[in-house]
Length: 116
Image (cartoon, rainbow, N blue to C red):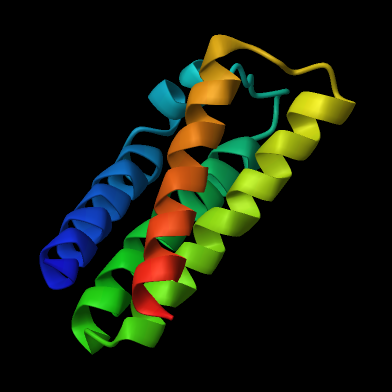
C-alpha cells in the first residue's frame, strides 16, 4: 500500500511540476504573480515551481527508496513552512493560500511518516 501511495504522490508531484515548467503564465496567474518587465520571473517559475518538482518526483521514482520519497516529503515540508510564514507574516491568508498549504502539509506528513 505504501508503495502505491508513494507512486501516486510522485505522479502528482511530477504533474504539478509540469504545469509550472510548461505553463509559467498559467502558474503565475494562479499564484497572483506578474512579470515586471523582466523575463526572470518566468525562469523562476519554470525552475522553482516546475522543474524542481519534476526532477524530485522522477528522482524518487528512479531510486525507489524510502529515503528518496522522504526527501520529497522534506521538499513539501519546506514549501509548507514558507507558505504558512507568508500567510501569517505577509497577510496572505486566502482560501487558495490555505488550500496550497494544506496540500503541501499533507504530502509532507505522509511522505515523511510513511518513509522514515
